[in-house]
Length: 542
Image (tube, rainbow, N blue to C red):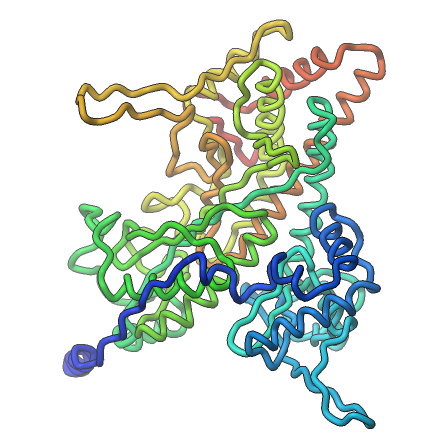
């Protein structure tokens, strides 16, 4: 492109009318106002139906078609009062984005004329074309019929004039053609497997759910400069040209003052996210120039994944409104940091216990060590699957460079947890397992409070790091659907926990004491770690 064209585009930008400032509104007033929340359900759905629906959502009970009609009636009334004229089954096909086919509420009755309806059958199930979406060879192109089915655990929401109903998406043969279906299956599997193991320690545990906290990194590029690069326009990354005069040599962009234009974009994005019940909390400049990050409060994994997919759509739309283009490509520019989507993963019981938090006594520490070591074994046994779950052409460019973790799957534990596992190797069941609480760092400055040190450091170069009370899967790419990595991780850990439980049950049935059996099997598994140092446990691909 000629230099004169470059100058003209920049002058056009300079004379572009400024965006109106985005006014901050009360969070309590707007949060989830466009979501069919439990509070909204209680106002629009009969109490007897509501009890059954909550039982489905909270206790994993089967969803009966008999309640769909009443739910659909209440959902439609709520949606219409919020300006909706259409509805859609919102699903996540294997093309990496989301999909929707809008239907009007209009129906024709020969006696009453035109009506506005949403029936139970329409809420429960729809029939989008399954032949034109990627299927990995699991579905013949000429076999077109497919089904989307309502997922009641993820609440419906409104965008514009459309009621969006989160659904799964399967082929006529029952083959999953989306990310949500296998994710839900993996959540069910780890729920059962982890609950069974928890019952060795606490019989009150009835369910274990997965928490997910994603960290979305992205680039913002002025649309006039974006339009000058055919490679950016067509591929989302630069393919030609020379290095920038200034990259990220001093990392001066990291945590720097957020530019005003970007801040206005972020403010509007946060406001619209909050209206849709997405609990975004953190925003900041990332390391590379024009790179930024957004992170929410942790949520149940299925809902968190839906929120991430919804957020990415919001980001693209709002960025254009502010004359930006958002880039989710993992490595859009050579020589500087790429973008990841760190997935913070943890397990929590229905009794409120985080299974990856060290306990306050030896017995609860045994439970913590049990789940910790089983996760290590799962990663060791299924590291090829985990690597495949985060593999993409874009991520292959990112991994292993500029602070991105390497493509070899490894686990970072930190010095204190590693030391505790080292001690277990030669300990006996009668010895107490002690995980030290947070220590104080005294800085010697009177007016600065003491800093509490966590029992593990963060690690920026491990693809799978233990960070105190959760694991952080750092190898996931920015453009990826979190479900790909999460369903692989959930399935691997569920498989390992089932193996563990079977071995424990077999030995207990022979008369061995439970605590001794648990410790013995954990000790054996812990000793099988392939390589241990004071800082990291590396699990290679064999």
